[in-house]
Amino acid sequence: MAIKKDTATQTVSGMRRCIGSAKFGIAPHEALVDDFPVQASQKDGLGRMCRPHWTEYTRELRRASVARKAEVDAAPEPVVRPEAPRRSRRAKVAPEPEVVAG
Ligand SMILES: [Zn+2]
Image (tube, rainbow, N blue to C red):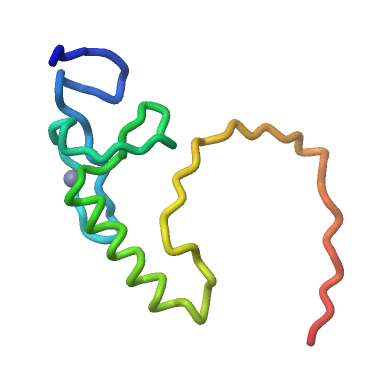
């Protein structure tokens, strides 16, 4: 298997940054690309966390989601969206809807 070195996400050939999760106490670190799960939704086709951490993350996320289900009806799975460039002019301010207490 040829090792390809490109893109800014891969610091060293065959290595990739696991972003971890401060929320769940997962420290970011470098891991082998082979340790990352395939995620087609990502622009480079790989997850942003290594497999064990991703598993841990989703598990914790689910647990947290269940814990606060009464509060927020959150999706059970994390939805990773590509950052969409959002440019709106300041002039456009939507009128605030009237809030009727009750
Ligand atoms: Zn990791």
